[in-house]
Image (cartoon, rainbow, N blue to C red; front, side, top):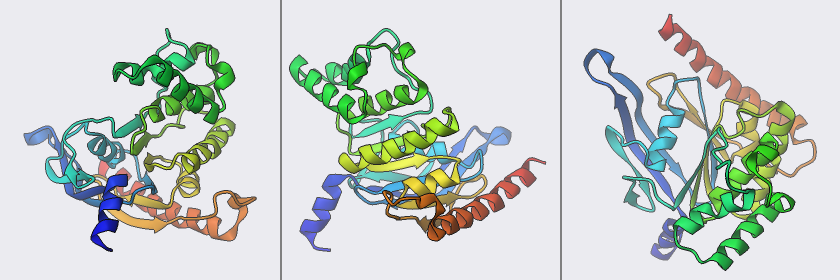
Length: 270
């Protein structure tokens, strides 16, 4: 890679986690959440984190978001240490976190307003993103008038409004019913393909991880480490992808890896 290519890569949003560890508490109450975690996520890449409950997936995501400081090692974004939250990273949680007193459009505009963006630009950006999310006809509705899937699409649109390099998603579809969850997975892929971002996506659903991601990082039982990384790059728009042999085999491979760690985690608790 040339120097020019390296700078181009860095400019687009490159995540580099190096030998990172996080410990909570002290003395007898000390808990090692994650240990010796190293992970590179390329610009524009979609990576899923999966593993047993309590393995540190959300902790790792919070480090990259700047919400938690590592006890050991470092996390870099574009070659610079992550020390706090920033507008270059957008976070979508499982909870919809929309302001109930604001309309859908005003929710999407909110971050831009706080950043001092003038009204016409806020309006144009919000309406464009709501159109992308299939919610333009609901721009004047309030969150309690939307379904769960629509609320999450609105939350994603709001996160995309300030054009972050990185999209961090912590089980964003975990509270949805199976049918809505499937629709939202396809919707997220469509939005990501049209507004390419670097994405780290936390999930417990193996099929979801394989379907959405270019790579799936499987984490071990606590203290969480990266056990292995599986390439899951498919033609996401292929018909009946869930029935294709290669897809089914990847799901099975990762399910067995996660199951091994879940059994270990259960053994540590008993």
